[in-house]
Image (cartoon, rainbow, N blue to C red; front, side, top):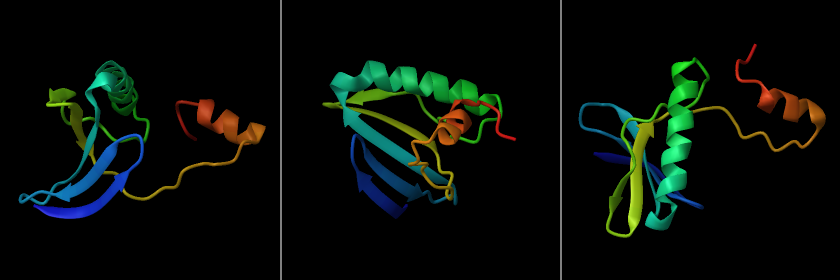
Length: 98
């Protein structure tokens, strides 16, 4: 297993290349947030299955010690939109990009 990246903010995030070549992301946050994490993954699974370009969850959320953890596919590229103009809000509100 190879560490591709690490980032810590609301969640501790690690990108890994597994021995079989797959690249995945592991996320861990406080176990107190397990309900929120599970709801987010439910939505993420639905929109990914519908064709929205987001990471597809690979596991359910599990509580390990004091951490709620899960894995999802790694989707490199793209950039976070930071614009607060109405055009950016409208783009973010659309489920199916054109």
